[in-house]
Amino acid sequence: DQQVKQNSPSLSVQEGRISILNCDYTNSMFDYFLWYKKYPAEGPTFLISISSIKDKNEDGRFTVFLNKSAKHLSLHIVPSQPGDSAVYFCAASKDTGNQFYFGTGTSLTVIP
Amino acid sequence: GAVVSQHPSWVICKSGTSVKIECRSLDFQATTMFWYRQFPKQSLMLMATSNEGSKATYEQGVEKDKFLINHASLTLSTLTVTSAHPEDSSFYICSASSPVNTEAFFGQGTRLTVV
Image 1 (cartoon, each protein chain N blue to C red):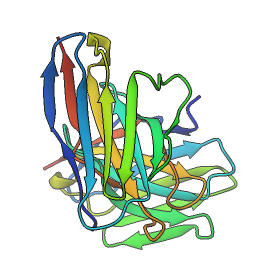
Image 2: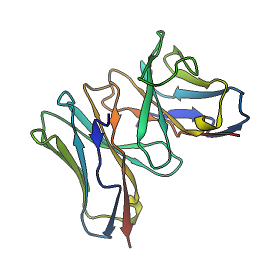
Image 3: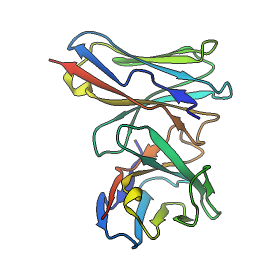
Image 4: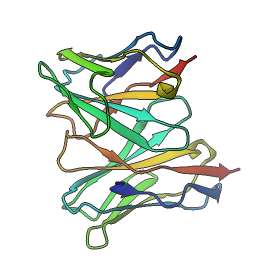
């Protein structure tokens, strides 16, 4: 049972434009969410997080939005750069430091 | 950020042999380590959670006798794939966390190919 879902397997965006990656979850007990970036044959790298007490967290070009009522979160990257091309996973946990449940990933391609 | 080192980065073994993968937290004490498996074009699937000094907790469907996990110290966890078969070929990734970390730190992953 996939508790965290990323329905778009791939996304292409022009350099300089905004990239929006979406993630949905089903378990209302999740209260901590993260986005990871992954290059082929490498481990995921932490990007940004948000706890359920917030609805927005911003770090430079990256902003994560959380809509608890809709069980939906999104990652905005603006402006998008070619180096952002990677697979992005969202992950959720029931408390910090605990096990994480991952979405299926969205492959982002930023076109120069 | 914190560093987690996973070794080896890739390994090829013969069917029926065992392979050990190491996961080390280099600059923090990892009270909890997680082992994931990723099939091509699929998500990271949690296999098991291990806490230092205690038995690992395996996810449903993961054979604990086949995937032996040892977390003997706060900086080292090992995953041993016993009697490996071609269907065990996959990308295995560990992650580590501690009570003071709000995110998990991942190793580089190990590409296992069983021939």
